[in-house]
Length: 176
Ligand SMILES: [Mg+2]
Image (cartoon, rainbow, N blue to C red):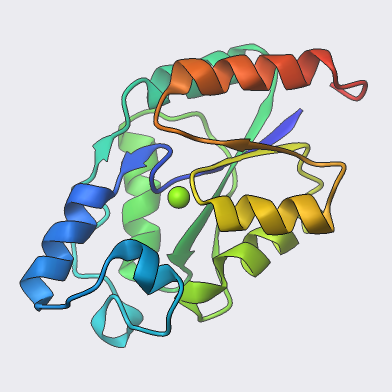
């Protein structure tokens, strides 16, 4: 299967870094509120240097990607991080330095941090994705609605459970 993997909250532990940034900026807002409003999380939409690079890996994320690759799945990464920012370079470096499997990385090209569900739905369609793993329910809701043939797996923080869901989906998938 061609599997799309979200980065923040699925591979990278983004919450501590985002929360530190939000506190330092004096913003009285949560990440959920940011995603659902027009509030800028970064000045000019550009994250400070080192922001993404400093993130820890979610437990077992790397090993899980290797396992999927070994099981002949094709992996692409799809992230709401903005195209054209320093965050792109840091994302590539972060994935490469940690030896995550190679795969295309799709960045949000809409210019709008709040357009994550629409952006990810378009990538799923354009790239003929069979299954997507994401921790943001609103992304998966729109994908389920617009692309009912695509399997969606909500990441709950535990890769063992997610791998199980993916393998069940693979067994039931006639295309493989
Ligand atoms: Mg995410």
